[in-house]
Amino acid sequence: MMENIKDLLTVFPTHGRLEWIGLRTERRGSVSIVQATTARAGFGLEGDRTAKGRGGSKRQVTLIQHEHFSVLSSFVGRSIQPEQLRRNLVISGINLLALKGVRFRVGEALLEGTGPCAPCSRMEEVLGRGGYNAMRGHGGITAIILESGSLNVGDQVRVATD
Image (tube, rainbow, N blue to C red):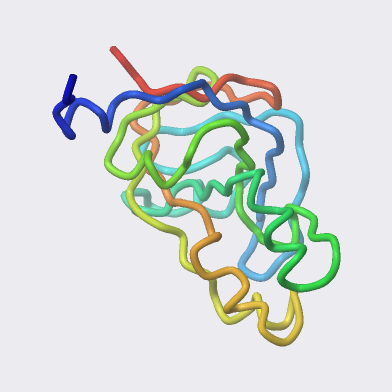
């Protein structure tokens, strides 16, 4: 039976899982690895530099696919750690690119995917020569926070049905 593409866009084979949380207190500053934080609607993650601003950005949270780390490691010839890529959340088990324009829950918070998180030129210095191109297509997504809530490593990531 042929399904409508619009309907297929809302069907996922499994839920995801929050594997890692990183907070950046300042631009180009170090990344603090935490087990839990609070998502603040319209701003960002508590403790992250984005939550200190005036809000409204389309990049309140950055998420990257856990499964892409092995691909990126093979491109650059060495192991890569999440803090090197400077994203806020590492998610496994769900295709993040499919969440563009979709509302989804991470723990208690409600987010909406706003678009791809393109690599910046800093990836060249962090990952070495060719690091920028290694990251292209593997940088994850950006999201806004629609409803505040707590996030804990191990939380489920699921498409919102409410």
